[in-house]
Image (tube, rainbow, N blue to C red; front, side):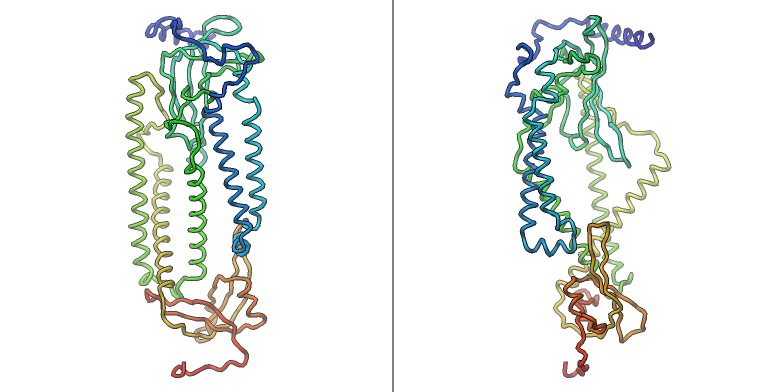
Length: 444
């Protein structure tokens, strides 16, 4: 009873401003609803958002599967697979991607889902009473998606009385800044329901994503895929993989013999300022521009009666937990910038070093293989210099065939170079010949 009273009050206030429910003469249902049930599917609907998204999924999955299959056939991938274990299963990954594309293809060809509304649905005239958009939910402050909510006025299919209903449409958070609604408050629009369950199946036709330019629309001109849409994500994933792999290689193989604030402190501070600070400034500017655009859009939308986004409302005060989380985020970005600069400095120190190697005798303590989370496998040689105090063990990342070259020999030599930046580092380790005798420095 309370719900009916509140609905009646909302309808009364709305009709005082927009007049009674009376669709204008020019209002008509879309052409696809003018045929007898079961209705044919117009080809135009396959150019809408729903099928455009499926097409992009098919093309992306097939392309990524083909790239995975080609990489699997390359000999170098088999070598890298000893260190990055998923590379050994690229053929299975390709099969899974092709299977995903096949499932999406079945969805594309089968007349199910939103197309059921076109084939068997009952169209209904409705009027937009209110529009809003808000976050669907978050996990660790990461939005899962957002949903458009439309409050509509329409006749009840069973009783014939005018009622108010709320319909929703969820959109992935990745499309937050590229979608909007073509509806405005007061518009007469097409709603549609299924005879099997009129109350729960009621939906705005524009929320089904079938007809281009209706309901939830993209800022882009169309949903036709472009090569850039497919190549760009694959290129970004490849760049992240290469950058991460090189960072692991540098930290395991090219790190200087001695780490100190005197030597590595300046690049760490410089990296925190340049890379970390630059990233924070860029994120701040991007967030500020997004908020300014959001506020400008909401002002224009409120004036035009379009959807108003209420999900980014600023809170007057931040909680202690939010402040601590923000401080931790800033610190993490600064540390990341410092690490990036240290990796670049170690790279320059080793790759630009053309000094002669100095052989220093070492004792091999042990050789081991460490697997991290069934993804990365690291081959390590633990050693110590014979000409310094015993017990100072060092580790070097290497390859399995390099470890095999030592056999049962626990003695070897470290090829130490002085470093381009003056940071001595070990280029490699070699086994020591049992009959080896030290060569005087003058002869070397």
